[in-house]
Amino acid sequence: MTELIVPTQAAAPAAESGLMVRAEQVHKSFGPLEVLKGIDLEVRAGEVCCLLGPSGSGKSTFLRCINHLEKINAGRIWVDGDLIGYRERGGKLHELRDKEVAAQRQAIGMVFQRFNLFPHMTALANVMEAPLRVRKPKAKPEEPKEQPQEPAEPVQASKKQARKAKDEVRERALALLARVGLADKVNNYPGQLSGGQQQRVAIARALAMQPKLMLFDEPTSALDPELVGEVLEVMKDLARDGMTMIVVTHEIGFAREVGDHLVFMDGGVVVEQGNPREVIANPRHDRTKAFLAKVL
Ligand code: ADP
Ligand code: MG
Picture 1: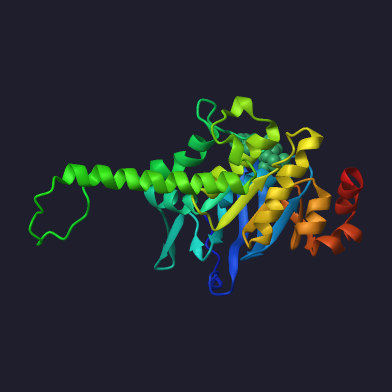
Picture 2 (picture 1 turned 60 degrees about the vertical axis):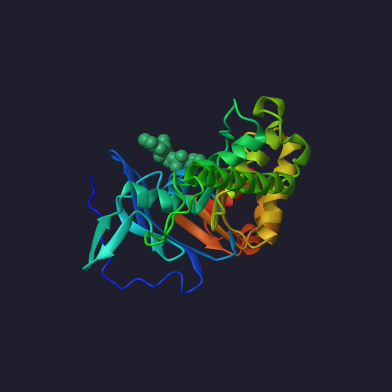
């Protein structure tokens, strides 16, 4: 296993410079297979970054590293100024505890190619699940200790609080489902929804944790062609609303129209990047040309 390399130069404070994501020399191997060979990438807050590249180039692995679903072997990733997975102290990196990693991951929404909805839950329950699980109200309402105990039973007070919290989560979930155009499907189970509708539920579910960053991994690749548009529309709407997004996609039209930045990856390295319209119209690198010729 490669040792985590701490770059010697001082790192720019990402949050102050308006960066939502900053990756610096990210390396990732699976056993002897080096999948990411030093990825540098920056995504500004509010930007849509489209990540393109042939199958096996490491796009999914890179997204998973940002979300700490995979541990990197070297390099560093910051999201909104926070170093993912580590704390820096005395020039050394210390691994965060599971709880701290979980907190970092909550701030990052992820949508996969396969919708990964809970099949035994309605659309509404799917969207409510994470906020309910994470924000479970404490057993007792928090009160300053010095205060005299109220005669009212604390059990009832906490039940009431729990109900109120659940109502709020439900209201937000209903609003999110309406936002992705599924106000009339909230009580449907995934099996009763089309692929496009399921993917829109998955987007609403990712938004339920109020993430500051959304990662999309080929969100339309598993869909029948006639269902792709409705999912892209929801993503466009999110982009217009200022959400910072990294989108792995082969939808060149989306990259050209919605993307602020395009990154082309091949063989675990960034081969070329720039303004999507410029890169698509005038790819400089042979590998980018060959890839675009296939997907355009
Ligand atoms: P992409 O998303 O660009 O198609 P991936 O990131 O999925 O590429 O995969 C890059 C390479 O890493 C592939 O060769 C793949 O087989 C390998 N890989 C991905 N995940 C694992 C894993 N958990 N264990 C071993 N190899 C993996
Ligand atoms: Mg992939």
